[in-house]
Length: 260
Ligand code: ATP
Image 1 (cartoon, protein in one colour):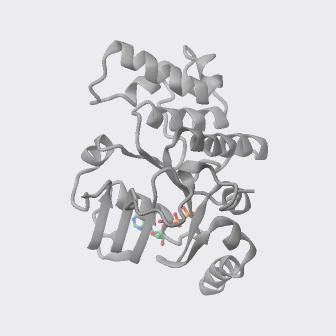
Image 2 (cartoon, rainbow, N blue to C red):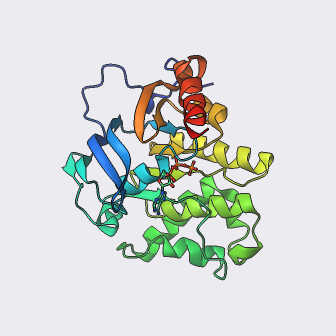
């Protein structure tokens, strides 16, 4: 279990004077006239694994899409690395090093593992030696993919496809990943393997905002967490503390009661 005490150096956040890598202030967003996210303020510090949890329909994916530029906030600001990216296009945000791994193992089934990884380098100016170095770095985190480079993605297991989706984002050498429901639809063992790989990303110094329904496991690997309910942040704090406290149950049970 991750605690403030045993968190690695890069993720300790006590009295750090550094500004957060990602900062949202008063963000509202939704789909056309339908508001979903209400007045969200949050911050993720460099090197931190931060979880965003909440019941189905709480607005977690909508918030990630808003951060990555797929949805434009109707109010509020999104800052990344000290720059206001609120009105930036998704490609521009991705090129700044803030990359989303969307829900649902979005890999190209008809392409090989290698071709899928190369797509992660799209529009990135990398030399051949840099590309080799990035692939090697990615394989050090995802050794299983190196053995299947020539296999078409469709023959990979669900868990391997999810790892490939994360790896595709990683070859771009992002500063921060937004990972949406990586364990969704996977058998327990595969889900555990995928989340263990996400936990391993901590060693790279990468910053992660992670959404997943495997709440216990996610709070076990995250440094801090935000709890969302009906589009609002209703609790935040060190993951270990949220795991023990009542805020979590209230967020989930409250939402269930609302939907009755
Ligand atoms: P889950 O864990 O089930 O994915 P979530 O917390 O990620 O839930 P969202 O997917 O962000 O929640 O959905 C929040 C609300 O936005 C829901 O009421 C959903 O119906 C609505 N919604 C999601 N996607 C769209 C869309 N493309 N168009 C209109 N409404 C949408």
